[in-house]
Image 1 (cartoon, helix red, strand yellow):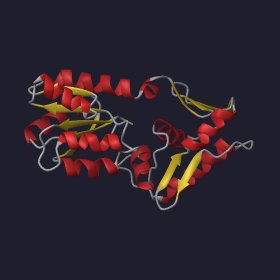
Image 2 (cartoon, one colour):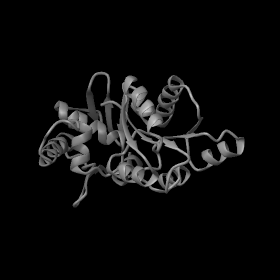
Image 3 (cartoon, rainbow, N blue to C red):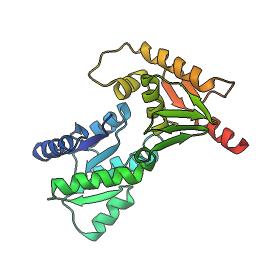
Length: 237
C-alpha cells in the first residue's frame, strides 16, 4: 500500500503538477479544491500526509490545519503548508497552527517530494522501522511474522494486511468501506461483509490461548484497536 497524500490546492495547474510528481515518486495522491472539501475527504479517508495551501476559498488552510489538530482522529496527520507568503511572521503563524513544515511558492517539485517523505518518516517512525507494536502484539514487517506475548500467530495474507493497517493507526475507528479501500484496494470489488469474516479470523488468531480481545467493534461504525485495553495490559505487565 503506497502512502496516500491529500493535495488541497485551488489552482488547477499547481494541483496537477503536485499530483504528477507525487505519483511519479510512488505515492498515491488525492485532490481537494477548498478547505471544506478537504475536511470531508479526510473524514472519509485518513491521508498519510496533507499538502495544504494557505490561501483557499472558504475555509482557509490555517483553519483546516487547526481543525485537524483539534480532533483525536486527525491530530497526528502530518501537514505541509504551501503558500506564497514568505515572511518570518507568516511562517511562524503557519507552524503555530499545527503545520509540520512550510514550503514557499514557487518551489522545486523534487525538493517538495523529499520534504513529504521526510515529514512522513518523522511522523510515523514505527511504519518506517522493521517492526510495529501494539500492547503485547509485535509485527515484523520484514519477515511477515506476528507474535503476541511471545507466541507466534499464524495469519493469512489478508489478516496480516488488516492487522498492519490497524496497528499503524491505533485507536482510530475504520468503517468496513475504509478498510476495504486500505487493505483490498480501491479498484477491487469486494462485499463489505467480507471485512467481518477476516476480522473474525484475525480475532481468533489474536485471542487464541485466552488473550484479551484488543479489536473493538463500534456499532454502526466499524473496527479499531482498543487503546484503553492496551493501556490496561501494559500497566499490568
